[in-house]
Length: 100
Image (cartoon, rainbow, N blue to C red):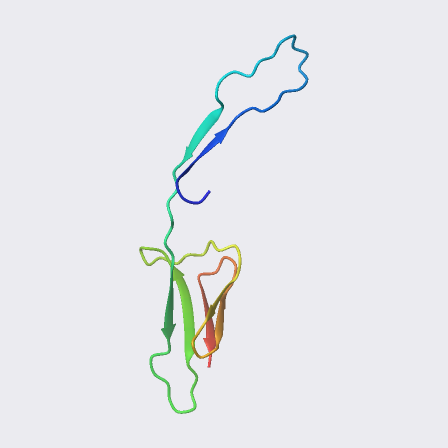
């Protein structure tokens, strides 16, 4: 479930049980789901200095509101940089890198 919501379920039909007269009582069941949006940031870092002909490594990292790594992703995440390069953060990973 995502975000706070309410789920209400009612009985719509019954079958079997060999009862002479079975009646549905009540208005169903209601459950309140207490969930909040878990903010995740993607942070881009790069090699701070590089010599002539050297390579720059760009790293994209997923962090929570406290700056801790987030690793519970269930599908790969692709980050596209404005230079056209892409960084993929894999399943259960907190970061990915590309070298240019």
